[in-house]
Image 1 (cartoon, rainbow, N blue to C red):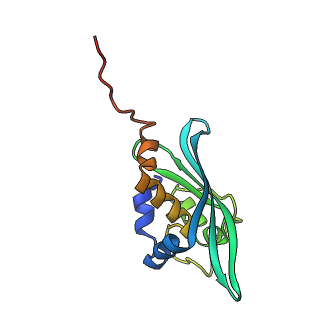
Image 2 (image 1 turned 90 degrees about the vertical axis):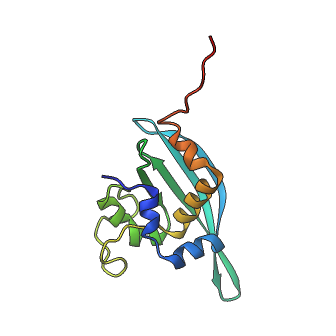
Length: 151
């Protein structure tokens, strides 16, 4: 059974959450419906500023979150090396991702125990969507709010 975003978030280390809030920025964010069957999807270009000698280096990555059903189960993806080498395999085993960037072998140095979680880019995107109400809006796709009809 796939995982919900709160289940994935609870597995993330506190330092990773802190780094997500300080070093990651959203460049563009698109909400829409994709796939068959159609599911609500958020796709974002995010960048992180990493400190290097003499200044900052800017890395741009693509982050995608899809809501699979009305219970909030998600399918997550990020193009950064941290997600690829640390979390993609573990999330795939839990049904919350699919092998897209890594080669499908379990990590031997990072995340040996296979604990699902998310990179700082995923954390920042989902925090932003939760804070702004966009995650709730995505769930309305499955359960639209009831409107009163006039007679």
